[in-house]
Length: 345
Image 1 (tube, rainbow, N blue to C red):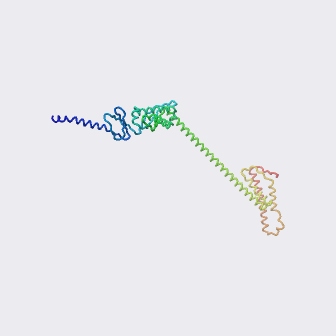
Image 2: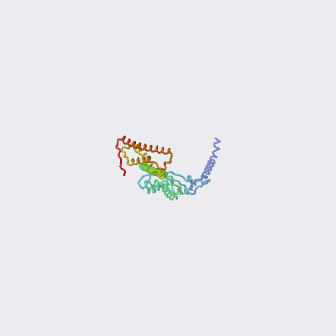
Image 3: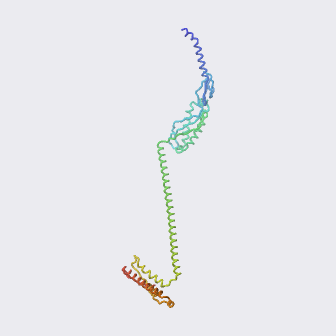
C-alpha cells in the first residue's frame, strides 16, 4: 500500500514524458523519393514537404497524405461513343500522366483522377463524333494526338502533365463485326479468284508460246529436210545427166534399156489397164538391127573370139527382146484386159 502511494507523484512525470515523446514524433516527418506532402498551418496552406527529413510544428501543422510524383498509368473502362455514321462503338483508353505540382493537384481540383477520366471521355466523344467508323478504326494516332493536346492543355492548371494517351481497343457492334468479317472474306475470295485467273492466263500464254515455238521449229526442220532432200535429188539427177553426157550413149543402147524397163511396168499390183506404146516395135527393130548388122570391114582383122562374143551378145539381146515381149503379153492375158497399142504422137 505504501509502495503504490509512493508511485502516485511519478504519474504526472510519466504522462509528461510520453506527451513529449509523442510531440517529437509528430514533429518529424520523413518523405520518400518522388513523393510530396502538403502542410496546412492553422487551416491554411503553408508549404510542401520535399523528399527527405522534414520538421513541422505539432498541433499547429496538418500534414496531408503523400502525393506520388512519378508517371502514373490509368486505364479507364470502355466508354460508348457515337461515330459520325451513327454507330455506337466501345472505346477503351489508357492515360499516362504525371503530377508536377503537388499544391495545385490538391487545391485546384478535388479529385484529379476523376476529372481526367471525365475529360477524356468528353474529348474522345468530341473527336470520334466527327469521324465515320472506317476512319475511326484506321486513325488511332490522330485520335491519340488530339486527346493528348486537349488533356494536356486542360490539366496544366491542375498540376498535371499528360504524357501519352493510347486507345487500347475499339469494339464496334456485333452486327458490324459480322458485316466486316463477311466483307473481308469477300475481299479475300476476290483476291484469290483474281490470282487464280492470272495464273491460268499466264499458264495459257506460256503454253501457247511453247506450241508456237515448237511449230516454228518443226516447220524449220521440215523446210531444212525438204531443202536437203531436193538438193540431194538435184545432185543425183545432175550426176546421172553428166554421166550420160560424158559416156555419149547411142540410140541403140537407149533402146535396149527401154526394152529392159518394159517388164517392170507390168509388175505393179494396181495395174488393171496397160497401154503398149508404139515405140516398142521401133526399139525391137533397133536392137535386132544393132546385133544382126554386118560388122564394118575394118573389123575383119579382129580375132575369131571377138566375133563369137559379138554373135553371142546379139543372140542374148534377141532373146531378151523376145522375153520382154512374152512378159508383156502374159501380163496382159493374166489380168484379163485387152492390150492396146497407142499411136505415137
